[in-house]
Image 1 (cartoon, helix red, strand yellow):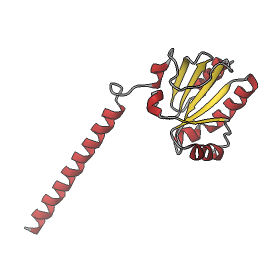
Image 2 (image 1 turned 45 degrees about the vertical axis):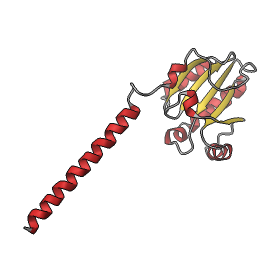
Image 3 (image 1 turned 60 degrees about the vertical axis):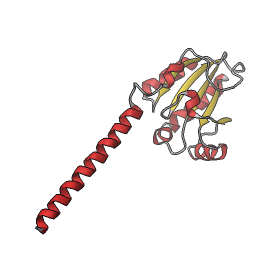
Amino acid sequence: MEKKLTMVANVLIIVVALAIGVQLLRGRMIQGGDGNRVHATALEGKKFPVQENWSPSKKTVVLALQVGCHYCSASAPFYARLSKFADERGINIIAALPNSQAESRTYLNGLNLNFRNVQQVDFQNIQVSGTPTVFVVNDKGLVEKVWEGQLRQDDEQKVLALLS
């Protein structure tokens, strides 16, 4: 009798664990599914939805980053090269993070990234659902191109080419 109860208990535990797993996967698929998620690329050709004086620079790069984002941290060497490249060409870079200014600057300094313009931005306002996201905005405030996620080397070259 005790053996049967133990077996029934084990089967119930497995069934409950599977049910929880299925629910978690369903929730993740609903949140991350392309049908329910707005991509930042939808902003291409449209006005960037953050109040900024875009005209001093021919182009502005907006980096949507998040404190603790593994892919943002892994992209730091590219962002350092991008920053130097931009400075040499008079291109503005804005680091947009949802975190407080202090928390954001501490995070960026820890990555050896010293952007002059660090803004606290609600990612829903700029349609960012994942970080990092790179926007190139022209002097009229129109988004020319968007890249989502950690960039491969060929995409890094495309960003630099667009800024040349």
